[in-house]
Length: 238
Image 1: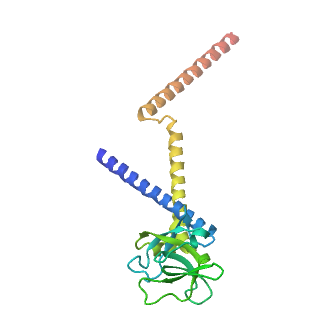
Image 2: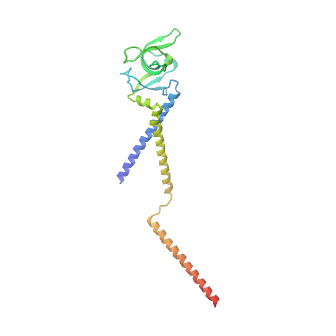
């Protein structure tokens, strides 16, 4: 019996730990989502670090498609001070549809314009030629700092979509709070009822005995009262 209780207690501790780890994870994801919305480049940036996902194998060997990479968020001044061989994340129209996506490639050349504007030629380590066009310093987001998390990029991309955020974060959090509310109500009721004395079998027997004695006392009192009334009536007749 004691072993069973110990096992149940251990399971409860493990479950509670996992649940609270998920809550922490959900909070982190929520913070990242709000950080991305408030960032001018639309990327989650916290403490000067950008969290980006790799969408292709153009830099295979350094990082691969599906990885998460960390880049240092750069100021306007730092964006103009980059050097050849630096790996940068920047905004560019990859598909020719007029919409800029984020790409991460290595700088192959630094170009200084007539008016002092800085731009860069870039190339993927796993591609055959340089990227088309130049990357303006203003389009640079950050510089890769060598940190990556393998294989979690797809999951992060899914979380950044409304459906993914709803399924992975919002719904489980709602279920968690409902579960905790139910536990709170259950505990509250148990504590409240704990203040009330529980009636045992001995208590019930004593209550029944006292009830019988009280009934007999009342019957005796009634009989005595009737006897006195009868005596009074006899005296009057005399």
